[in-house]
Length: 226
Image (tube, rainbow, N blue to C red; front, side):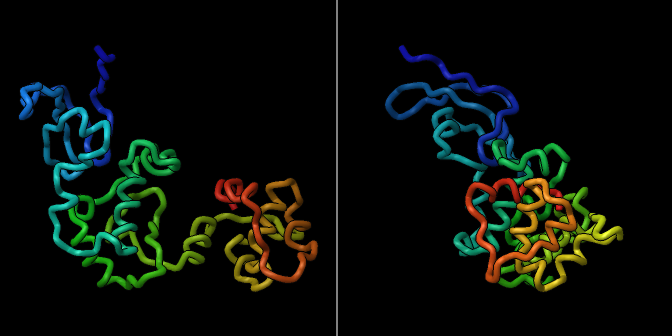
C-alpha cells in the first residue's frame, strides 16, 4: 500500500484553493478516489479528484476554457495569465513583490479575459507593449493600469529614485534619457552592483557597441533598485 498523500486547506493548484476534503468520487472501475472541494479565483467552487490536482490536469473551475475567444496563443492572453500568476500563483519567483504586498486584480479582469481584452484594445494595446501599474502599491485595475513600452516600464520602476551625481541630486530616470547612458545601461548597473561609485559607474568610458550582459549577472541586475 502506498503512502497516503496529504493535501492541506489553503494549498493552491493553478487557480484553485483547497477548502476541505470532500466525499470520495466513485470511478467507473469501482474505485473510490479521494477528492477535495476547491474554490476558484473566479469565485466558483468545484470538487476535484486528488490525482487531477496533483498532476495539474485541472487548474480552474472551468472558467479558463469557458470563454471562446480564440486568443489563447496571443501575447495579450499570455500577459493576462502572467498577471494572474503573479498575483495568485503559489510558486511565482517574485511572490514578495505581488502576493506578499497584497497586489490583486480587479474582479472584472480576474474573472474574464474578454473584459481585460476589451479594455486593452480601447486603451492603446499593441503587440510589444507591457502592462504597467501607475501606482506600484495598488493592484491591476482600469484606473491604475496602462500599456507602455518595456523601456518606459523600466524607467517607471525608478522614476522617483534619485542618485548623487557629481554632488547633485538627480532623478535616475533623467540619466537614462541620455543616449550614451541608455545604450550602456546594463554595464552601468553591473558596475554599481560590483561596488563602483556612482560617478565612476557612469563616467568611466565603456567600449563602443551594445553591452552584452553575461548570464552570471542577469539575475543580479533584475534585483537592483536602480
